[in-house]
Length: 156
Image 1 (cartoon, helix red, strand yellow):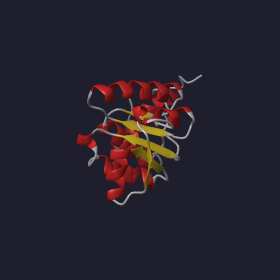
Image 2 (cartoon, rainbow, N blue to C red):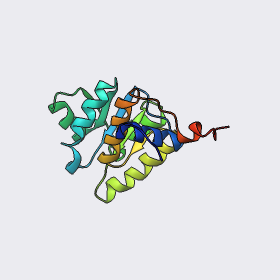
Image 3 (tube, one colour):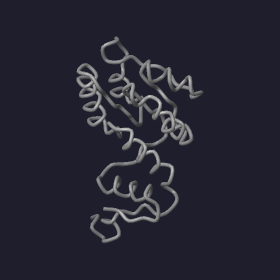
Image 4 (cartoon, helix red, strand yellow):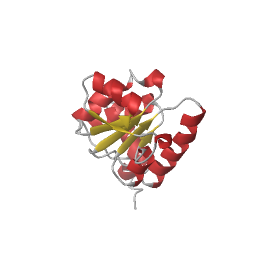
């Protein structure tokens, strides 16, 4: 639970209360299904505002570059190395957005998600979640981000 004047700040507080930290600027890794490619452009623009650089799988990178957003390309797991999981394991990314459809993409997503979680990299499997987290990062300085546990003195 989190209370705030802005929903974005409330989300940031809830995120922090869950024991997660907000992504620090660095590199954002994006790989989304075809149905999400157009919608991810707005999120990518906000990530650039937050001083992230972008890296994406081929199809996603093409859409982002066509929209005027500078984006490097990385291989999918099945396309050879270095691939998307290598980028995560090597600590080259600070935030992952990965939506999937199709049997192979779902299998790859399991490896991506496992790697991100084991390396403590914030990860979103939906554009709604990614949008909320990016908006939380944009608004994180708009008011105090103390968690309810801190306010109640439960953090010991």
